[in-house]
Length: 104
Image (cartoon, rainbow, N blue to C red; front, side, top):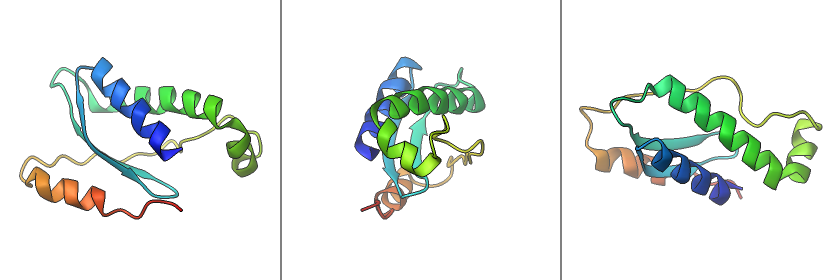
């Protein structure tokens, strides 16, 4: 599921003329390092990313998700966190995301 989600996020960022620099996830959340086009409002992008990815993941993994969400049409919570990293070296941010423990 995580691999499929990465593909979806990569494709969607390209459609928005943005770039997915790093991606990883844990059992209950994901980390994305993005280079967003300055014309793109981060909140609008995240809303679209969550909407599109939820629809596609529920389509591809409906049976698995039904066991966790009891058949409710959800995938993401309504919350998210956006942190800018203008001062931090990208290598440090990428290393942090790479070191996240993937679900087993």
